Image (cartoon, rainbow, N blue to C red; front, side, top):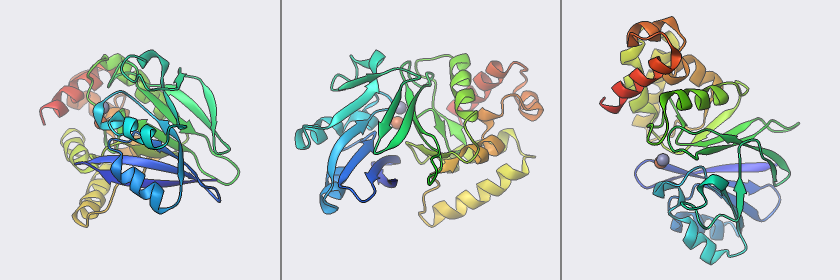
Length: 257
Ligand code: ZN
Ligand code: FE
C-alpha cells in the first residue's frame, strides 16, 4: 500500500510524497524545492529512496540535487530522452515502461506537448487501492499546460491518452490552477452545468484555502475544455471542427486570458 501526501510549495506548486505503508521508505514526485520535503521526511523518520520527475522545468527538478546530497542512495526516474536537461537521472524511462514502486505497478506514459519529453506516472488500481496519475504540467484541474515545445496535435494526443484512463483515476497535477482554469472554461462553455457546479465548488474551496487536487479523470471529462475538443459546444465556441484546431484555438485564448 502507498500513502500519498500533498505538499504545497512556492506560489502554486504541489510536491507529492509517496510513502510505503508500514515501512520507512518514501518517494517524491517533482520536488520543486528540497527543504520542506526533507523536513517532512525527517519528521516522520522516512528515508528517501526515489525521485520521480515528469519534466525538466526548474519548478519540478529544482530540489532534486539537494535531496540527493542528503539521500545519496536515492534513484531518480526521468525521461531517458531528457538526459541532458535532467542529468542526475539514474534510470532513464520511455513511454510504455513498466516499473514497481513499493509493491505497486507503475506505467510510464509519454505525453509531450508542454515539453517535448514530458512523461507521466500511472499507478493502475490494485485489489485494495484505486488508480492514481502523476501528470506534471500536462493535464491540470480544468485546464492543460502551456504548449512550450510541442504542437496542439501532440498535446491533443497526450490528453487523449490520459482521458482514456479509468474515470476513477485520481489526478495529481503539479499546480493549483483549477480556479483560474475553470473561470476561463466558463467563458468557452457557459451552458455546461457540470462545469458551472464545479466552478462554484472550487471557488468555495479556494476561499477557504483548501486544495482542489486531486481531481479525477471522470470530473475532467465533464468539465475540462481541453478534454472536450470534440464536443459540438466547443467546436462552435472556437470556430474550428478538427479537434487539434479546437485545442489550438482555446489554448491560444487561455494564453491571453
Ligand atoms: Zn512545466
Ligand atoms: Fe510547472
